[in-house]
Length: 252
Image (tube, rainbow, N blue to C red):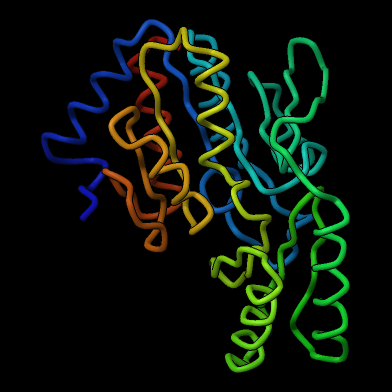
């Protein structure tokens, strides 16, 4: 069971390790962790106060890497802040070089076939919206009310060889073996210089990263959904407040 982020010896010890680290690395999910969930994904934004906390943390010597199922362009649209890097979908953007390169193996034809299957299945069904990403799909269910339709769609996708995760009013459709855990493991292999690691996320797609970083990082679940993190906080607001305290403590 996750311990509360703001209290208890585990939370205080984690905060102290990050406060005193010379070069901490913060892996941060975007939607539901930094940016509140909204009905229209294109209108999501990181609040101004949270952006200010992130700027202060980077000035204090922390590396900030946004990890999202959105494309790199989609993450930039929501984040609107230069940080260390974006791991978006299957691509990576290093802000210092402005280069976008491949990061994880992918198969565009396979994900396009999944998109075709989904479009045929949800056509004419109100409240189910398909979002096609670089190499994954998000099927938004924010207005949907038919659990049977959603379950059958997930079953068909799994039978076709795709990985399907039930998130917060969304189905995430992924290629097998390509997930946030693989992305952060590769980052740490390429950038071994960090002396303390944090991963924070809010949904089922973040659980791969929690598992991949077990014993190697401080892990925080934001909200009630994600399992497997050592610590938990209530929502994006409480997590933003914690980031602000950490930035102040580090002198950012």
